[in-house]
Length: 265
Image (cartoon, rainbow, N blue to C red; front, side):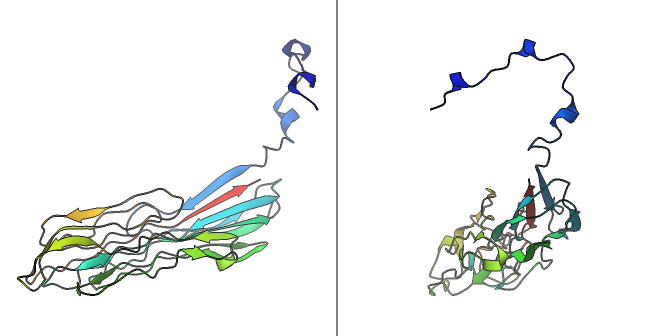
């Protein structure tokens, strides 16, 4: 069996000075490798980023990864009582490995946010990200599901957002979602018809494999809107209230914009 000591070694003094230049390494396997990210501005009105991208010379393979935009948060839809909330979901992830060649073109779109600041008991689903071109069609990553609010504390509720996607789903080799199925938690009183609560908390989820985090909580507040910008692919913030009485409606925020990453080699 070969060992390190059996390999031929070249000493530096054996190389003729100035005999090697950059052109000597032009056929290196690293010369056609690279990573390209596509994304829009990180704000609640982001239009995303859509463009026409050309494969560099010498490339033979591409690994395409996409994340949909996060779902929007819900509004505080009942103005006269505390509610509980299911936080918004982060965008779905999808990936695909394909063969290609230099000079091919691809339409690449990292999804923007859905521009609705909801005051209803539901938000809006995030926009999809997609890539189409040579040897790649019908490939996308769905946006995350919207947040929801529920005023019926006696109801047993849970999320139904699918997290596991079978191979081939939406044109990809591997896809996945990420979502906490729980509803917001808090303490509440009973002597005013279960309408007042405190120590309210809920957490929208991130897009898979991104690693972002966002969390909402309040102890006692008339109304707090979901006004914060969340990271890329993350579920949006929801409006929260802990009080009984009128005038406590508020709007939810938008999710984070989508992403596309292309690794070519």
